[in-house]
Image 1 (tube, helix red, strand yellow):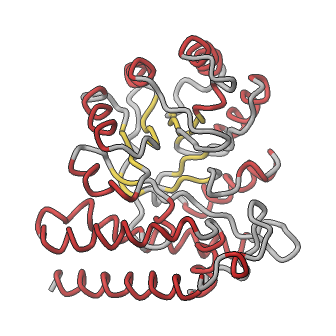
Image 2 (cartoon, helix red, strand yellow; image 1 turned 120 degrees about the vertical axis):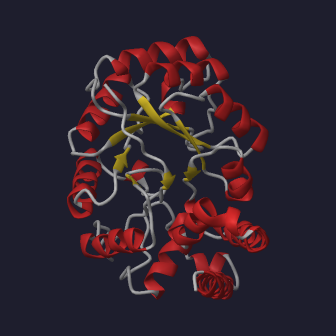
Image 3 (cartoon, helix red, strand yellow; image 1 turned 30 degrees about the vertical axis):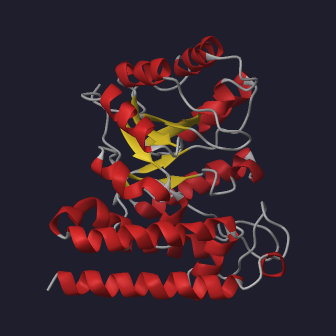
Length: 312
């Protein structure tokens, strides 16, 4: 089996909710179109940004099926929904994800070693699950930071790379030297190392990370796309853009994913900023939050204008 490439700029999808706490599929359809319009190369649905821990299995499956249907093959869709520690529940979750029509299923590293016992436990659980997943289904691995960040060892990365079944690793090491080492370890394999940390996004791309998979793809995936595809032609502007993206990404600390929902409410994608993971008033807790968002939007539009001029 030849694994399908899934790389480039891959937004981690946020989930819109109605005022009565149901998934807002009308807003979700607009969000899908916005991602594609902004040049996204694939979509990562039912992930941490999607508030997957707060979705039932039925909701996770319905959400994934909706994204696959509305994307209609225009870009690949990978899905997770891997939230359990019990192996039988994990098998149920991952097989359900595989049956949604998605182009790939993403496993979460910390659930393969929930008590941090080490590589032997991780590998035993992984192999048990691999035997239960469709052999033809491309897979991903995500070093999800919730409930804790469980980074893969070099041996674990070599195993998933050499298996031929894994096509992406969402790298959450947030360390450029680690990204470089992982790129070298996986050279010649189908496994794409996808950095998810905005602070090192451009440097990681230059080091061989095959795209970007961080939360700020919910604000300006097109800017990361330009950095990934065109920075070599305009190195002076690329540095300016990379610096803006790093500073803009600091907004994540102010109530993400709600701040991203505020952005999409402003541009007409979302009806509400309702969230299951954040139930407090973000404006009360984070003073001047709207002013911060104003500057992110202003800077984003300024960068888009500069890119448009470069294309002339």
